[in-house]
Image 1 (spheres, helix red, strand yellow):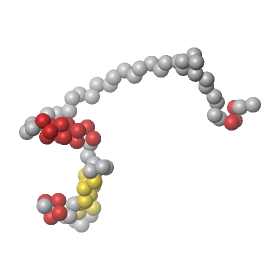
Image 2 (cartoon, helix red, strand yellow):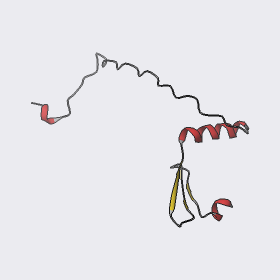
Image 3 (cartoon, one colour):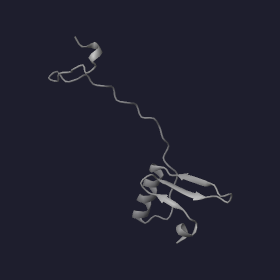
Image 4 (tube, helix red, strand yellow):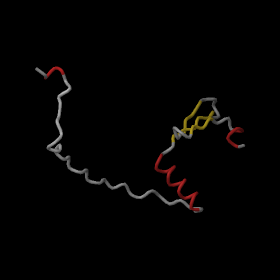
Length: 82
């Protein structure tokens, strides 16, 4: 296979691939989980073209809710306990 011919070490779990350059150094190719997901979804749907990623607009963070009245909170830091 092409990967074996190039002496490449792929890591699917880490989305990385290490290979030797022309100068004999080891180079690392880093993957992107969002791109990998788009490629996987396109491949499973039979698409032959994968478009650009949607613009990453920052979504407003939800405001933190106060704890429910029936929940007891305990301070776990011994420096502040009596």
